[in-house]
Image (cartoon, rainbow, N blue to C red; front, top):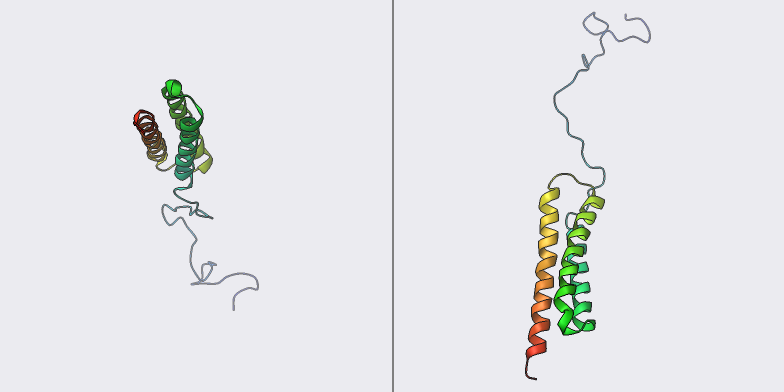
Length: 121
């Protein structure tokens, strides 16, 4: 009979499940999975809203200066949104997708604004 309070397995004083040891590389799962595309969608929404406001409010002769500024602000916003997201894997890819998508939306809004300005109607 083993002594009280001690494990007795095969006469070595080990617990019944054996020796506890490192079983190789372990991964740490995310406790609360985050949205994958929230920061990208926020960047695109920011770019679209600001570009539409510029197309409506700013006079036509200074549209392109403002659209250039919004392009830079979109890049900074994309970078900051991905930093807030906090996931290191795929950071560069997500920043580039967010920034290039936002700048594409700015380009589409600029094209529509120019076509609306030069249309004969």
